[in-house]
Image (cartoon, rainbow, N blue to C red; front, side, top):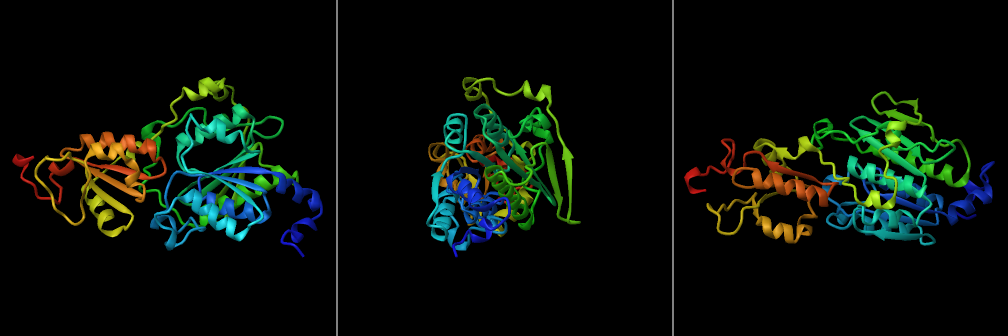
Length: 366
């Protein structure tokens, strides 16, 4: 008895449905809380070729929800590590690894190689980028999202109407409308449920079995274990915001940062630095700037060097930047967020001159 026998005996699925999975190519964008369960169930179901896109590394705070990984994987790249783990479990499948984040330069090329796309990201910029690319390429997209105790699943660009994310949200939110990334929190079981539901939608799309969530959003509330659906329909104003060509797509700026989360006060910065192993407090002042601070909790890497080699910070989930007054650190936090959209990157408010700074500096020396 092979490992797919319990699937092939299902009425309406059978050997034909299994063959469709085996022949399929599915791209999972983000090997995080949503991507890990989606990847595991897609692989277990026998999807023949799975692409994994993620430019981030594994950190300790990921482990409560990114259940493919363990402590021995911290510091390693998410995409290639996920592929290695899954390949060991399912050697008959093929995995294609993309170790960079999707952007306007590579998204169309990567997505065009696959039949269905799973969005397992957690930031608005990438969500709009993936949606718009899938619309241009006419690729079905299964999107999942979570916030605190609630999650949602949607299937876009599929069926007669072929709805897309902009039919629901025509425009990206303003910076002041985005929740503070540092304070949302999550119980790992929630993205596990939502990511599994995403895998189920992909299997239905590929096999033709069941009714796909093509014209509605499925909501799940963890606190009361309730599901409910909301019907959606085409939104002309939203569709007017879609790129009308590949050139238009490539010219757009999809960088949307968690505006309220770009700054962090000294109290919280110190709490994270001292109590969270995957947090790094970085003094970004240039070489020669005084005073020279020698603190165990503070790492000095000049801003110029960080710009030359930002990858040196990639092992950390929470990157806290401090300068003299907070201006340069705010600028750098914005730039790094564009390179590492999945990480929590902050400027410490007021820098080392702030009255609440624990560094006890003489302002006349700075």
